[in-house]
Length: 377
Ligand code: PAD
Ligand code: ZN
Image 1: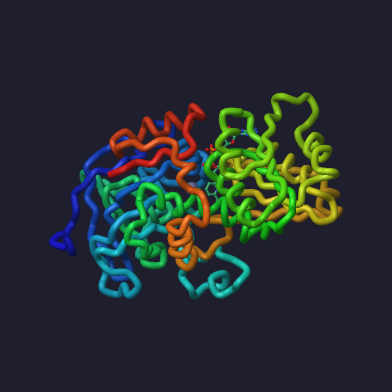
Image 2: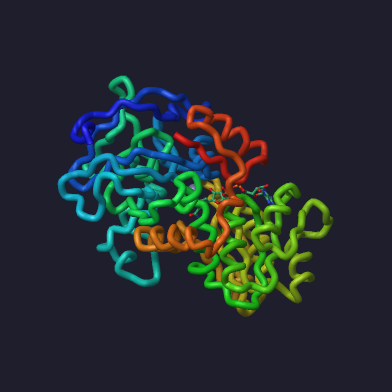
């Protein structure tokens, strides 16, 4: 392409500081270095994690930053050492990379690539520089993806090439985070068994994707829990067998769930990011064999405290990022599976807006009206 090797000027949504609306501004995107890929973003959804970041709830995250980690696009150009990706490829940027060389990448047991930037939030490329600037000021990246920009630059290990020529970017972008996280937590992290009972706390895109995974795994009972009853219809449409609102009951929610499930569920999932519901989810899992998976991201500094007897009596507490799925390997397969209608995904998209209306998308999330808002470029 004629832009290869040149700086590209384009629009991006910059978070200059925490708790301020995003500001759409013209930025400069430098060409990709040796192992990097420059991507023209076609669609990006808004995840609650972007909102946590914008609210300053992620310790170490630096501003100004370009957020966004649930996108899909087309490769504009690649650095000279890139071998797995070429210009014109359809791709999904990966906030959880897969370098293939670290202990976790080499282990079958984990997807937590040592090159991930979740937690440290260094926000820079491998050479400790950024490819983004605005009026000469350096802008940080978010988890190596920064999809709230017309163009972004990612490391080759953070880019999955997707085959399906017809894959609609405004749907498969969800495979970059929300869908894969929830679905993977059910099928990979928890390894839900057929015939089991599952309880899902929080019915946003993550919780709904857990339900989809539990359904595909053949769970017999799938109980959704949310304080917003407007989320119940969609939860049932993707596979929940029952939904409950803790505010409709005076007794603690875990007591109710234990009564409903003859002592506790085989699998429980926390998809909110709230310390109290994390403990409720653990208490709702069956003694002896229940597994509780934490997915929601609690605010910086929050601490979990619970009676260790809950674990001594045979419950397992787990957690993962990106559903425990090895990202570069699994994302192309999930896109193909979506194209073959092996699972539902379209239900998760409730709103589509032009990129310029990104702040409206965040307002819909705050109001509890959206599951996923997809921004189109
Ligand atoms: P969301 O805000 O769309 O959904 C959360 C849902 O929880 C909403 O429907 C709320 O009504 C509901 N809720 C809130 N408080 C309660 C409560 N006390 N009891 C019951 N229900 C409640 O978020 P999301 O689905 O985009 O993300 C969910 C969490 O998962 C969030 O913390 C996000 O940061 C985290 C996440 N983790 C990963 C990962 O890899 N671990 C990836 C992506 C997102
Ligand atoms: Zn996310």
